[in-house]
Image 1 (cartoon, rainbow, N blue to C red):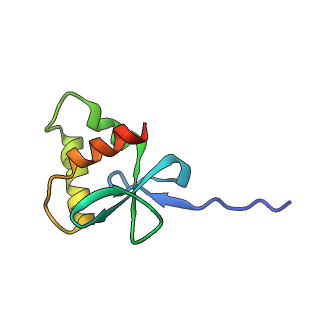
Image 2: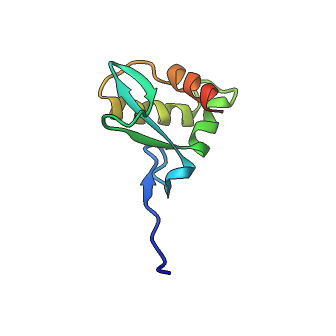
Length: 92
């Protein structure tokens, strides 16, 4: 049987290239962050980047990096870290 290549996707925060199953897929819709539901454009976050959100430091360097990547991806400057934390509690 042929050895098939697995598709790699890139995390928008750390730029790591990982398989789809190792990433969380999200989208921005109506200025809200949502889990991807097979419609529209989406982006990926790796679980190592999302684990930084659970740290005690709210204004840590990693959180600012995640916030900046989300603002760039969603094209506005709303507060997305709170929405991302809510999505992560539902996923886990």
